[in-house]
Image (cartoon, rainbow, N blue to C red; front, side, top):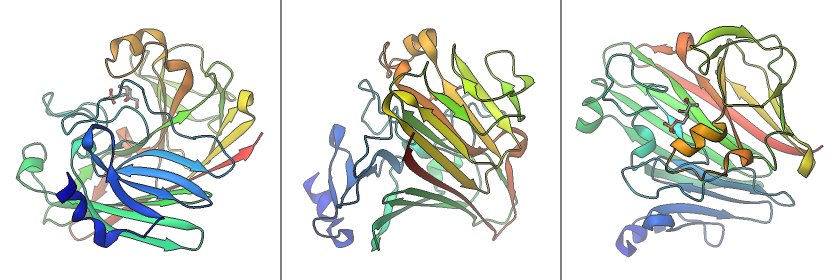
Length: 300
Ligand code: TA6
């Protein structure tokens, strides 16, 4: 491990952004400034913490998460790519794609004003072509500051048009899911994965009272997560994302997930800026697609 950490020294900003040994011995970039504390693992380019100064931790990470090269981290912000859920033409392909279990490479760490941007990348190789025989590169820029900025840039480095799905599968920490409310999807149609993917229409704000697994369609509006118990509103703004997924496993599904504590479901809700289902992206050779997300917290 030490040798591996040595190889990252060149990227560090002393006392502000350092590559350290994280859970399971996995390397992570730890950002600590007067404005923010944040963490992102090279494993899956997976953000596991964002805590602006004066605020409580914004992201949920399961106490039962696995921390190894073979499994995705349960919680934080997994990156789903190039498919969301199962791969339609290959039931053996990893759910939510293969980049959340890849070791990404650090490209740079930079400080601009009150924020620190960590940039990582991964690209096609023999192991990815087993699941998806195309050439691509992904760059992920995570900006830790009073706000959290995310940018996922997909480049088609091959000669054929690519079709992919993508999601930033963010697990938001809440005090009690039954009191939390999700706003910003009123009047938006969605597929209800808990009801045979029936197409429905959202009316008003979302109150979660049972297993909830919905793909909201053709929506680029901002989302607000209201958490009255801790008097917090989390605002999620996005660009180049035409679907939003909302998920809470509730009791049974939580029990079925070995890397999620049976009693942890009330403390989380996933709000996933994405391009999935009928809004998968077609990308021509030489083209790029950048999905951007900005998260900020305010008092309620
Ligand atoms: O985003 C919601 C969802 O697709 C759910 O259907 C549920 O499966 C969840 O993702 C978690 O998926 P995972 O593969 O991480 O267990």
